[in-house]
Length: 505
Image (cartoon, rainbow, N blue to C red; front, side, top):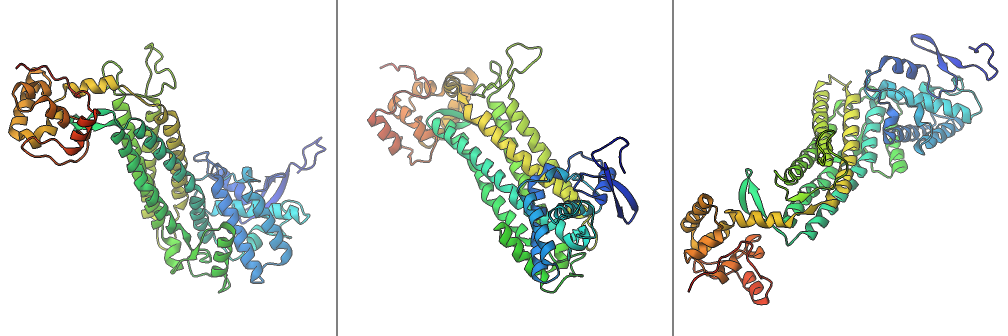
């Protein structure tokens, strides 16, 4: 079709498929089946190109299959070279804008596979000196999709796409861990009250709190990496249901080896291709780890919001960086917007995991038709979690400061410090002191000295940071811990964390 008055050539080209002829934009690298999918699946407005690593994975899989087919004599030199070159260009970031199908689609990923087949075929045609759509020279199905099915290409590409994507998430986790550790080192000697069930518990250091957050994230770096290794088992060569129909007996192993050579990732052919074609267990497990990380990150953000609450009517133990004004009506208000946005990312990831579970359970017989929604949710969870952790580290954790006066005052007024005295004065005496302190509002140290339970030197040692924040030996006789005695002798302990009154006599 030519636009009247146009001198630039036809605006469309005619392509044919099972359902008939359609006009496709002349300059588009995709074809008729992609066009139909665009029209049918207007769901999320998130196209395949939103996840460039998935596009790269599709191209690598197609490149590996072309190499395998060429090596087995099923694909001639000229076509194989053209397909390889087209795939290499896509891996390098070209033509991604032509991957236009919505991430969530019917057909178990067929539209994604055909989008890739058509783009690769039309670019290969150009390389061979032909025009787009001249499929008699190189066909999306006959040549690009040779010895393949959506049902082995799509899950293999998704596995590779996740393997290419998740290292950025690991990197962001490690960045957050190191940022938390640095803050822990900065405040390693600052005492504060720890809390259980929102009630005063026993003293700890601010450094211990930040390091605990770092450790809880660190635990999942190895767990995530170990879980991702399950994606290295693939069903390439399974074709429609795992029987390998239309393939050379050598093809599955050959194609898998080629994919390994192209990516540097050690892939293996699944032991049971029928099982592997319908199984989505690896996706469920990986998504579960993402949920676990999200829950932990959200809990940390809850703590940050609570500890920074106020500044006059809340905890006000820490100050989060002020990154934007907090209210359109209340002057001077600054909100904890970074923890808040990370909380919301965590909620999204937790919900995505539930979707993955439903989709995995909902597959029937020899194929799970719902892998597109699994792909979308896992890739999206990985993407937003990566960004969220970098944001939390750089725009919140790195700039946190501690209100040491607030912490010291809370510690002075708390009855929780009495726990440190239990091994020396006994539980009953400590309970009586705590009850009186709670009733009268008087500091624990005042009451202990007033009742003659300890002298000031011993009390100072027992309420030292070393004694209250780490294990040590003590005895009912009142002998002070060795580490505290060393601090006292060296002059490190210069005052109590609570105010002790002068005693008579």
